[in-house]
Length: 118
Image (cartoon, rainbow, N blue to C red; front, top):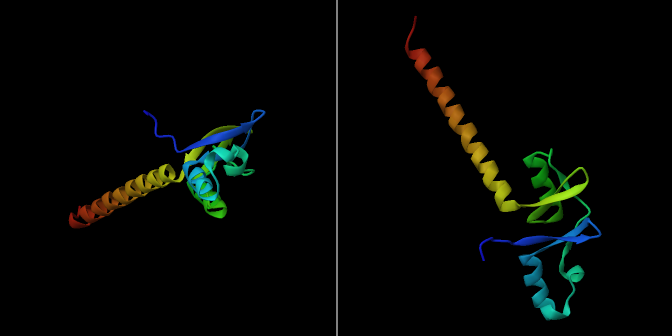
């Protein structure tokens, strides 16, 4: 398999009603035989969506409030993605690394300016 798909949206009449993740499936197998379950019984239902304009902090807050590892994202009231927690955290770590690096460069400039007087 080329793509590493770990969750898929569950649609009903063009509306996203939930998502089915590998964790949902694994937990369901512990309860019953997987072939005896419907998607609706196993999926994580969702009435809450992030918008493309939401900040990373807002997305993390939503994920934490609902205990989700995936966050449904919508644009113009249409579902467009499932945002994995891992991807969101990787982006935030990259952003913080850039901020720290820029701060270090600023500190070096301040130090250099202080060593030479005009």
